[in-house]
Length: 202
Image (cartoon, rainbow, N blue to C red; front, side, top):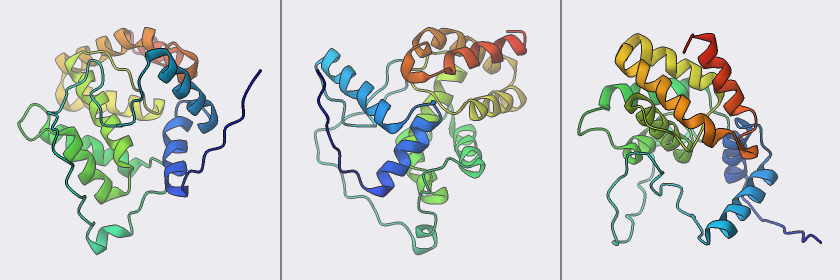
């Protein structure tokens, strides 16, 4: 027996969802199904997309109500998200990360807001990409993923700009994360990561 549930989702959210889930080889409908299954299994509802992620750097929490978001400058309003993660967005994430990583200026939530305003990338996607990068260079496992071509691009930049220690940590992070990614909701991502590590002799 099954039940059909209908969701009324605005166009911008639907585009953002498709951009994230499409990179994992999932349809939005299948992703929602996995979300509901996880909610039931864990007995909680993780509505906050910026909630701390296991193994990721966490930001301080507060019981104070969140401040109202500032309206973007007129020149940035044209950068409204199209739902597709472009190379410009990927490059902007790297610049923001590489310029602030390891300094007090690294704040994934604040940087995600800036990246969203500058490029139109959804704030949630920018935050996920920043957290993944932070875990990569620290050699920590990840519980989120990204498009494989973006991951390979970042691995190349880590090797070129941050050096062998950070690149070695990033490879170790991928090895640690494969087991978690080897689940239906991640499609063939774990397999692709293993293939990448093999191709570079790691």
